[in-house]
Amino acid sequence: METIVCPFIRSCFDLSVKGKYDFLSGMVIPHGCDSMVRSYSTWNYSLNLPYFHFVNTPSVVKESSFEFFEEELKAYKKSL
Image (cartoon, one colour):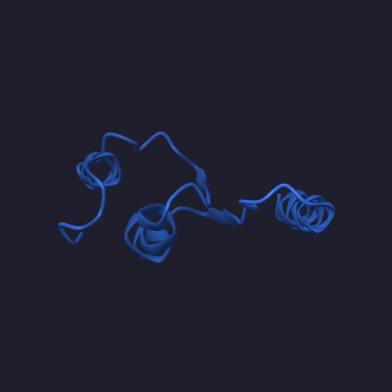
């Protein structure tokens, strides 16, 4: 991973590549920070887990944000 990716994400990715998360059968990644968003495809490609899902979370509190997030959660539920 690039050095501009936050240390926490890089550390988690490093541990996963080293097999420390072999117990996982899937992963859900939320839109928590830009590093997480940008590294989603790297994790998905590198870990080869049977289940991967990205949940986009709104960053503003508006009625439209609640509607958007409700649809995101419906898509997540359906993917399970």
